[in-house]
Image: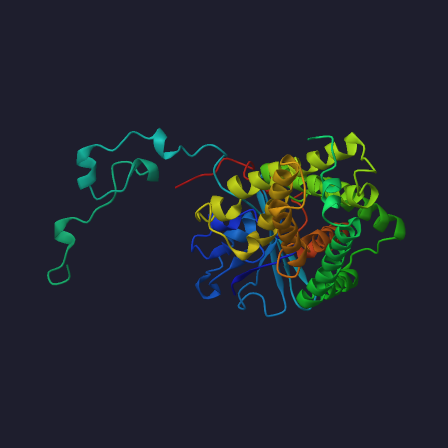
Length: 154
Length: 257
């Protein structure tokens, strides 16, 4: 079920607009508050739910783990490096979870500019930028040998 | 210019009662527009429904003293200091505009009702307060509309694209810009004054269609948010993580394969 915005909580900061991977969180032209302009295209990634500093965005969880009438809410605490989840079922039961925001230390991922620029011959290689080093695979990506191919298949 | 009451210059062309009646009409428009807005959007009904749900699910009941303390915090932090804003620049712009608007409106009313003619000269400090309020509105409003509006920063829309959400800020800016130009030109009841009255009528008459009423429902929402934190419902949000060293990103170095 797609995201929706509590208009009284939203302060129109635009964080959700910036982060939405589907580009469907936008600013309403009447009240300058956020809204989901295309609920059909929302894949419930919860990016906007976690990013909203006002906790003004809500999202109904999937019916396979929480039947209708439930509430799933997330609290992102950047300073602690945690995301907490609270699922309240319609019969009143609650489940609470805490998980890390990321599995690598803060600041440990180099930015694109910190890597060396690609050489001309790199553009002809099948690997993506900084592969295989970035994947931590020594000796290059595993490849199929020609004798492994079957005639008529490839 | 900064010490003479510009509204007293209108008395030569218009009786003071006309300008006073105009101010009363604007006040009535704001009250009626806000009541219509509350009824039309159902914001009061939404607030009381949320309040009832929050009380039903409360982990603990709040006493009168606690509610008073929360109301005081809401007033001091959320209303008077615009504490809900997560963006510092928007918060400063909002504070400038809000306090400028209050100073500007109150000093305008005092000047019109208390010192309506040249025979009742206004204190220079009061006129300077009017100027200060107007300039604060201009500083905060223009900063917001030209530079930190979310339509431009997050949406990437052109700077001068105008939508209905701009009705409040643009009519406010138009009213104050025309007031400042009119006062700087020496006052009187000419074209600038007519345009000033028109822009002000749009500002106060468009309450049901603009975001003017946010000054009433935003404090109510901030109060409700603080109450939900205090009574344990937290609008269904989870409690803050209590053991970040165990569950947070800093718990251990991950082992990537």
